[in-house]
Amino acid sequence: PDVAAKIAAGEVVERPASVVKELIENSIDAGASQIRVDLMHGGLQLIRITDNGCGIVAAELPLALERHATSKVERIDDLEHIRSLGFRGEALASIAAVADVTLLSRGRGAEQGAQISASSGQILPVTPAASPEGTTLTVRNLFSAVPARLKFLKSRNTEVSHCHHLLEQYALAYPEIRFSVFSDGRQIFATKGDGALSSVLVEVYGLQVAEQMVPVHSPEQEDAERPVISGYTSRPTCYKSTRQHISFFVNRRWVMSRMLTAAVEGAYHSLLLTGRHPISVINVQIDPTFLDVNVHPAKTEIRFLKERRVFAAILRAVREALLEQPQ
Ligand code: ADP
Ligand code: MG
Image (tube, rainbow, N blue to C red):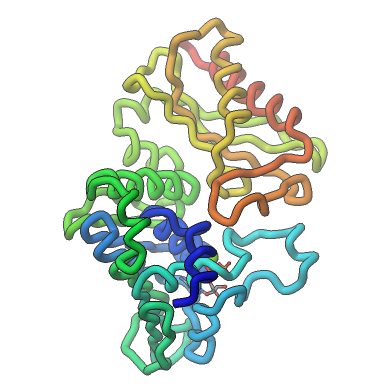
């Protein structure tokens, strides 16, 4: 395959978990209420994501694998109002540049399914194929043609745990989606999809910890510029290992941010709760025009136009959640 495609792929596809992330986002964008993930040998041998989303009609299957073909952003102004997780139209093309990909799909209401495969960057013709409604994307032999990348990967277990952690994050962000995750045939994670964040907390952290979490919410939104905060944070009496587990979702996009982490820690510190390791799940809803999600094709980074407001809103909401709780 062509060198430029492989280099571009390197930006998006670092390890099995980066493939899982892109595929999960596509399933979520497709409106799936059930997503199943299968990994074989840490995803290096096989990653398969099955969803019951809107599917892709046969005629559009080749487009799905083409670079910069996206069905999600119509005009450049749309970038300001991105509601979908994907919008670059390069994930599937990038994955297909470094793995063997099969895309099997049946659109809602379509009588028949169809499938397309790409092997070593070569796209094969679409063929009819039996498929439930929704999409099954199978990625085999990831990086087998990119030995330099393979060399940097860790053990099978490390790759599984990266995928597992990532899927936990998406499950926390989408409690209404039923996730099930299998590694080498064994189920390692599952959620009910009942819409309650509290029930996902049980699956991720266990009942004991989940019972020690208190709801976080900001006061009613007064103006469009003010972010709305919701989620859960652990009671100060709750200890979980020595690591903190703070997850952030901005408009339901998983992000990592030192600034947001500092806001949560600031709330604990302001109550003189130092030396603790909070567990928190914080959702931030904000007018998308105050965001720049277009920072890096794959990294979970985000830029806020009014960072201090977001910081202050989180600190306040977490602080109040802790204060409201009887100890
Ligand atoms: P993007 O998500 O940025 O649009 P991708 O390369 O991830 O780009 O996907 C390309 C296109 O393939 C999407 O725009 C969408 O139309 C289609 N597609 C991919 N995965 C799915 C899926 N699971 N269900 C329905 N459509 C999908
Ligand atoms: Mg995508």
